[in-house]
Image (cartoon, rainbow, N blue to C red):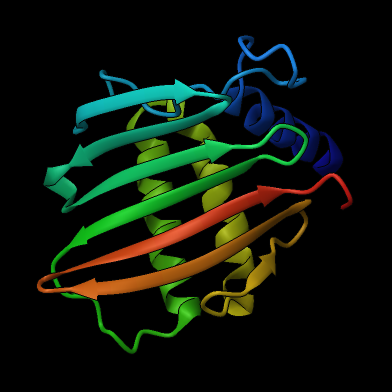
Length: 170
């Protein structure tokens, strides 16, 4: 049963990340993760160019916005940049920061049925949270994906970046 759940999870990620436009890539061009109808989401933008995409959406009621950059063909990368409004402890350990991102993914996964795959990412990140170090690749427990976490601070804000990468050699 766990194996079937994993295959379903992998298929959802690959097929939701890519569509049918790019003939050179088996998965096609990246597809939007979010849409204009996500509860609480505003200012949604999505564009595709040369097999890569850029997407952004604001969640002002939840005090953050997200930028997503998708690229790759055989090895797919999704980079999520969370622009967090408010203070984030500059000394927050990477495992705690990973749990914050897992919590955001979990909350978004419950916002709309089209985002349920983010709940799967939340589970994978949460299960691997103790393995996270800033600017280092971390294997996600039970998945052929790597994740890398980074953060920067501004005045009354922070940007936390989570890059998820599939690997054909895993």
